[in-house]
Length: 103
Image (cartoon, rainbow, N blue to C red; front, side, top):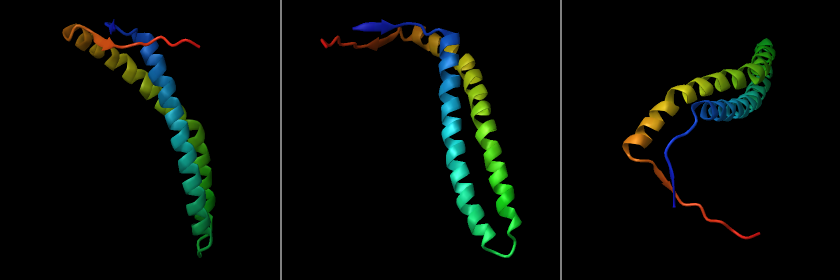
């Protein structure tokens, strides 16, 4: 059994930022699909211009959302990793069981 006592702050912030970037990208794609469906519904009504606005807005989200989520995730990693390291120090590490397998 191994014990995890500390996590590198910058590495964790980079991981958190990249993970959040991909979560933002996936949520932007889902929002884009939803907006496409809703804009098709709006275009079938009397006021057809609302559909084009929502498609343009959701395409803009494909670019903006991942970067905003990534920046927020990076900052959260910078803030919470030292707190996590402090908790590891208080509880004397985190037990990790790693098993080696033969290929």
